[in-house]
Image (cartoon, rainbow, N blue to C red):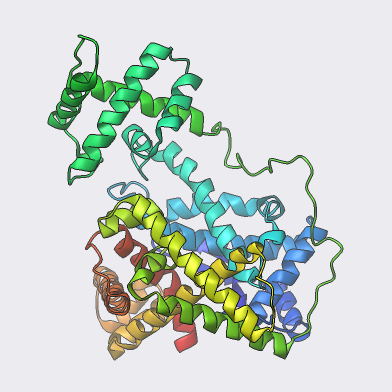
Length: 484
């Protein structure tokens, strides 16, 4: 994220956002630019990371300072844009919700930055990866806050949040807990648990998504239920469908927080918050020796990942494209338990390699503490993030001169589509179509690079391709600035 993300505020149009400079905030960032030294760990912009950490300390110490709040409101609004663009491709057929709707829903979080960041626990940030961890915390929290609002606006038929989707993802223990919470008696719970078991068996046995199940599928589940049911009372497919719907409603009642406001879930489980940085002075020294060690550590992580060869595929999907284990299993056509074993096994090997690196490079005889695992994971995230940046850069460099000019006019100059059309003697609709075609080409070339490097064959409309589309969209402007 460039430093301008801390001093620009949005003007929202239907398809994009125009960012306008807030003069006082920019002057403050420029003054900090002169006095703060870069951080000593590998990030895209070490100075930006240092200024962000300084501003965070200031927010903790002076949570009502207008200037500091303006910086963090600007930052959060930028992250809202990025998260909204990532989520938009996942909405599927919900065309009544556009990018501007998503952005406005998420932007409510920027109203109170101090409250939003209240639970960011710096004690979990290891090995100096403060800024990447902080950004990831921000994005995950925005996603979790946005989902209830989307469901309130569009109903539950999205993001796997249908009743059947909740049933499919829940364990037997979770189903029982939900049914007990909803007041069902033991006999009915036993019937519902058997129906859940038959649904899970059938779901795993057919090569089709459960959201495409029809009356015949539910009748097949009912047939299996009747085979296992010890009583003489048989049930129909429609009854099974109703039971599964009831189970989903029970899980929802157990799982959902009260939908009172966008801020539900912000507060900590603990009534006493410890301000970890209140009395810690901000250090601006740049330690060259430490920077070299951190750089060497990142290279060690890269080497260990490369040694995993094809086992690296699942780690990339998990840490590079940020797919959860269920989506990875669907993408690769394997069981979710296999995905979990691959990830655990890969990190065991990485942990062992890091231990050896610590002994050799840092002359340490002790095994690094387990708390450092968070730092290792941050290193893996950073490694794959850098790779994705390079893929997108390579894709941009491959476009022709006219496409390059169109991208710059739209993303950097912020030229309206109508004015771009006049320059190229095209209609506004033609310019929009051309931009979409360019982005599709960039996405396709990025996918080609990923598939070649990781020996992957991604599903044409799977979760991985959708994630790559979102990554290209969210990183395009920043990467264009560096290439310009």
